[in-house]
Amino acid sequence: EDSYRIAMVDARDIADVAACVLTQAVDAHAHNTYNLCGPRGLLWADVAAAISTACGRNISATMLGDADFYRRFGNSHVYLKQMQAYRAGCGEDVDNDIEVVTGSAPRSIEQFSLDHARAWH
Image (cartoon, rainbow, N blue to C red; front, side):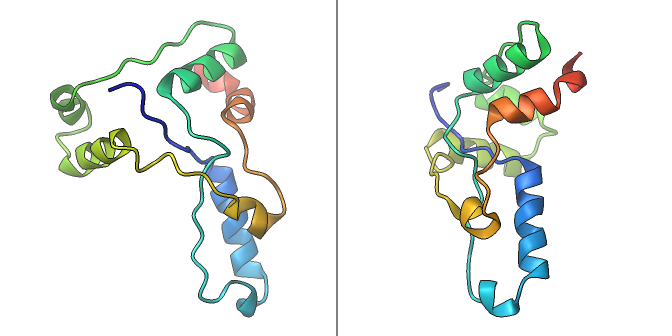
């Protein structure tokens, strides 16, 4: 249950794509659909390890079963269904749309963690 991967995307990369789409010629992006994702699929243990390294203390990931997840996230069926879809593998696909649109590779979890290390102190 804890071995699924999610190609998590940095919100700053989403903003960079939006800025390009909104400021470039309409024909550059008309009729295109972009799959915005991080550079690789991550286990929650990968996320915890990157945050641990960035902030200098041990962070661990705790996996929740469906019932606990449902309760902890406001009794939301939407969040539960999304997590179940991730567990089934729907979030691990990786592509290069961020780089195609912006010219820059998506930020890694390591970069995100370093840039936000103060948030975990």
